[in-house]
Length: 450
Figure 1 (cartoon, rainbow, N blue to C red):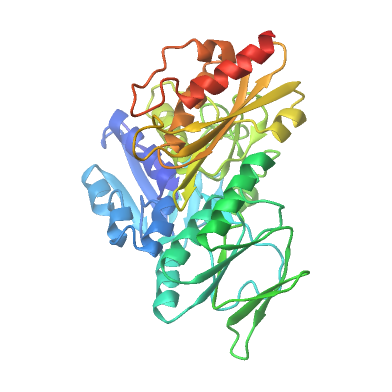
Figure 2: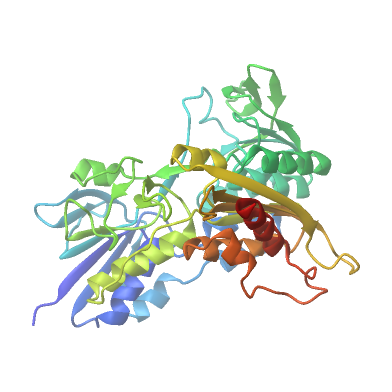
């Protein structure tokens, strides 16, 4: 009996999840698995890098889920510091930086994402950092240790908020420069305004509606300021938090089909739509929105792990399908927790939904109990049917995880009335008698039914 070979390009969430799942289903005598990773580490949490920079996670190794040796013990060969340089789809080979050609029967492309880098002069200067790999975190920590005092964060998405918080906690003065009017463009303006106020109250200087024109450098080529049309902001350290795009250079050059979002176009099985022996998963792929069915690119480790597992299952002989995304995510800035799921109002309009919104103000716990914090819950529904389309939450500690209830309800296709009548209850003091999520659903359903 001949042994098939699976080659995986990329050794983080999607790639290693695919490799591990394929190995669970097919033993080493049946399937040879080889992973090519261009960096020194595999299976690490990029989402945790800001908190290692900030010191909340004191040990870098805490961000490593599994080592190459642990995968080797399961019969998965991992080559670190080996970059895949080309894919020959006709020959079924990957040409790598170690001079070898790795033949495959199945290939998983898990090349991840790349930080968005607009064409701004000076963006490659010393002192300008992404937050993508563990080496980025080490470089930022070194810059802080060397005496950096003024930081400018470009962008107000998840990474931008998290980096602004941790740099402030490390004692730097922090300015956040936004091209948008408000931070967290994934939220509606009324919720973004709450975040902007909280950042200002913390001491973070937020400068909205100011696309960056230039990174100014000193005589040694190191960053000294960020210039916009409105002014110049001094900086010893600049952090890029402008979002992530799919890294598809290899896939494009090889001839794999690319979707409308720029990610690799895959079916629900994570199989390439153009080359069935190739699978792709993680930040490099285009997935689809659960509500609209449209192609979407969402860079989240949770999705990457699930997509990798789907690919590994199919390769291993077990049917599996990825069921799409709602874009559910949560983050925090200071004590303020921020979460969203489904469609925001702009997305609902673009998708052609006739929608309405309802927002309620409440507390995270019973009002009489210590630790009760303000929370705002916003629900977006389809006018007429009451179908839940999206939700956003901004509030104190204990707010963010409530998005799980709303995400589950939207996933299940529930209406606001059905959610309001569901068996969702938390006894005081952990919640008011009626949880804010239920109250928001009840208000939405009452208005819908008149």
